[in-house]
Image (tube, rainbow, N blue to C red; front, side):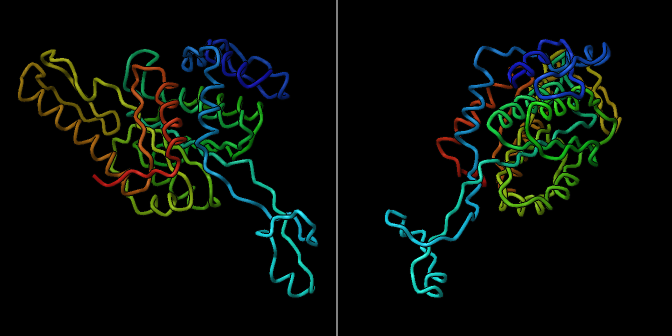
Length: 323
């Protein structure tokens, strides 16, 4: 079964995959089938291929690996001459290199309590899982190795980078089985873990970015790798309807209060605070060296992901500037 088939089967809500070969992956039990409906979203014909193509065009290069040193032959590129070996041997030698095609991709997905917000089947956690599944499919289809981190204030689950259809099924199974924790968000645990990765990875942070995240460690990570921050937003968090008295709760701290959204001043203050939160996210991205992407819970996550990678293909080394 190919990668597109795996994603389509999962997103139609027909179940998860158990351990098996890349070509024969068995459907799991009924409990997993019910959980898999969290990842249901419409996969249009060619959607995975379109995202994979946009991803391939924008993925950062991984450089060259030395293969061998051999004597110069007519037609060899003189720019490949190894002058030290030439001087030692008394005749020209060239270095032959091969391109490293497999990129390491890390998906860090927030599963803290605040991600539970949203409508049935359209919570922030649902959209984060869907976006991660699509990104994993696009990367693995292009031959890259994908790792997964599910994080709250610490790393809940870690899958080391690997490739292939079987690994993709393992990633999607982890996304399906993940339940949003009662814990707070802290991406510092991700920074600590990814600070040990080798240079040249593509790192995608998927979170609502409601908490304040220190910039320090992320600057160093972004200098050595390509960093994209995908912010999952429910529009009602930014512009709620003026519906009168409403009970609101902080899902991470448990604090509750009642506010009157029918009041023009209170409603305006709510929107102002939400706008400030969005500005802080953009400022964090500029300081950390991350490319910001917004994903609304009301839209198919494929659309903003396509825009993200198509834009990066036009300007792959763009970094947001401090506003």
